[in-house]
Image (cartoon, rainbow, N blue to C red; front, side, top):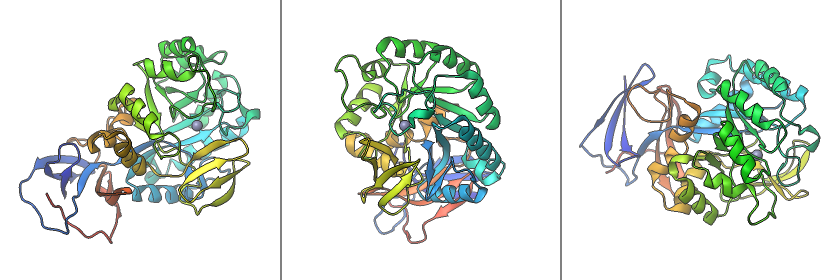
Length: 392
Ligand SMILES: [Zn+2]
């Protein structure tokens, strides 16, 4: 049995958490205090990222994706406090998507991978072909919703595609969404130019969320007739947002937070293989993109973002800075809320009986300074340099 002590992120009480057989066995308030070097050490659920295209030079659509590639990604994200993520594959030819999902389901046989990956996210290929809306998705691979094709892809994925991002205005989208709902696949609206009526029909059909609200959209839009208002107005829709400081201006994040409320927002990184790499010019997905010093990835030719490079714990800190929300809300947007959306019963909150996925961290100007990450009761990352104790 392992015992972890720290300040509970949700109510600032000093607690001890007992872990047994990989699960949270007991949480109790304690009243003694420690003397350290003045840093407050918090305990929170480890983070869940629902959109990760790759990391540290590894892209999940690599033709030869290996178990060691996945280990490299997972060790890297553990350092950032992330225990769970959805490998995300974007628009590509059917052949390429079939191969990607065959590779992903094959690496999932490794137990270290399986603990981190509960399923996959397919972003595209049934999205808007219009410039701006499609972002960096390749035009020649964008197509109409095709349930037969999707079933073949999901067979390759051994049924582990748990979310698809699509454009609701495409022919056949409504029927496709209904099929997804019957098969417990979360439908997210993204990279689209749907009007209010089309969005409403998609939500009536069972679409549950929006992919990176505010992005995957043309730079110039009609002030009344655009995809945003209805997605904000419909209370049935959750939304993911990229709060890396580049994809959305702070005041837009404030508006999304005020309208959707913290319980309906999900922080997502949308990071790619360039995350964790040195700044410079890269060839990514057949296009020339630039990773800046600050961590922005842009395709300057099309004037669009090419995914993101900052990891999720930075989004948590930005969310607090941009909106003034508390640590508890910001963490929940990156743990509890995605767990709720996907129905992950075993993780996402600190409750007795849940899988012991937790982080110990302090706060600094850059965000969360991760001291320790525990996944299924195992310490998977420990920052030896951070040698402080709990102070209350
Ligand atoms: Zn996207």
